Image 1 (cartoon, helix red, strand yellow):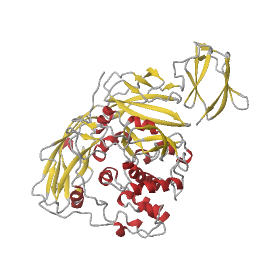
Image 2 (cartoon, rainbow, N blue to C red):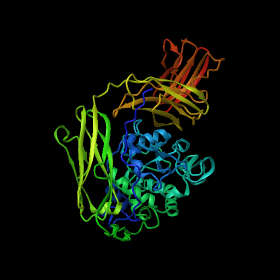
Image 3 (cartoon, rainbow, N blue to C red):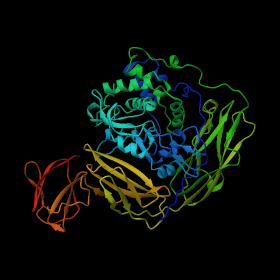
Image 4 (cartoon, one colour):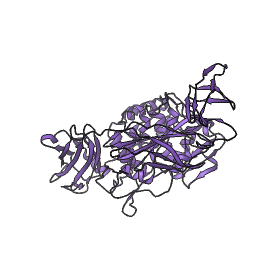
Length: 573
């Protein structure tokens, strides 16, 4: 087994906390002035909708700064998981992604991604990787909540002390029999995430309408916004949310206005919809703290290094340099200094950092990209100067580019240890090096496909939360030097009986799989026919083999075969 992780981190502490003030820049929300209700909602969307679309798989590397506790545990940062109270740590030498993989944590959409599917895809919209809708999650809690709406739980079938999943109370759920209820300390956090989603993504293809509907206003259904307003009142904006707002803006380029203005939701959906909103009336004080001493930069230290590791030539990788400081009297300047072939290979995302940003947040996360065009070892320096500092600070940037690897297509194997509650997915190993593997699990829940991806350094991954009544499948790919291979074949696991169970009294068995059905038989069989609702024979294959899959358009069909009573199946598109 070849196991190499190339993700490196420079620092081992988190951003210091900031004061309880909004950190938005002057004029950022000016379009909202003088608006009310639906016009205010539309203006808020214009203020924040344009942002950087982040890579879904890279989110843990951003979350290691935005979603960690301020206190260390045994010298390690601890993930701030709003779905459980489990202790998941980022240990020394781990990046966010490698820690995520080691802890078997998951990237969780607070608004389920299956709610906006279009042409079978959930990735067509930036909502798929928007940090205001995704949070680090305990795996078991994520699997328990599935794609259920938020709501008060009547009878919990799952309760880990933070997350409850179960039957809903009358008047809630929007037609779903089950709901997910977060802990009281996080109800406001989720409410403000849903307010953001209803504002920024009011026009996407909402195919499941438990809580959302496609329109400019109100977008949220009445029962939903009334409940979310109650949750937001009960759980006001916390320091955690304010800190996260400032960090997310540095990565994604936009803020959550419902964190900056706790009363904004009341102006749009609640008790203040007849009132006009003015930004100046929402501000309690100057968000910029006063200068209290000499300008200083405490991180990084002059002479430190930021190592980007190995990537393939023609690829690029982004790393973050944490800059901490205070009392700056003018903007901090940023300059990448390189000579010869090193020129243009390392690029900082900004050349100046406003003094107010440094002083208010007590720091800044400077994104630096390593983008080598040809193989080789590269080195440069990023210099920090001005800001009222007496001297400059230089950090060495290092990276190695290798030839682009030849990627193979892996083979996914039938699972081992298959039980009603779990199984172990298995796959082949490439002939070359794999930095890590990505196994994607697809489940059909209430007629909708739910997919989740997991990273591992092994050629297997064990799932312990199988529902024997749910059809599922999996496939796998691997990553090397920032390149991901084509996906493998797909392995199907039928509901109820699983793939290994054949009723001996029936020589042919039909098992449902996503998008069609699987035939289970002993050897080859003849005479299988597929009929549509009118009785017309659509297909009569000459020979059918065991485990053969038939994928069909959405509809209702009848399958017949010698030794098999006619089976009526429904395929959901």
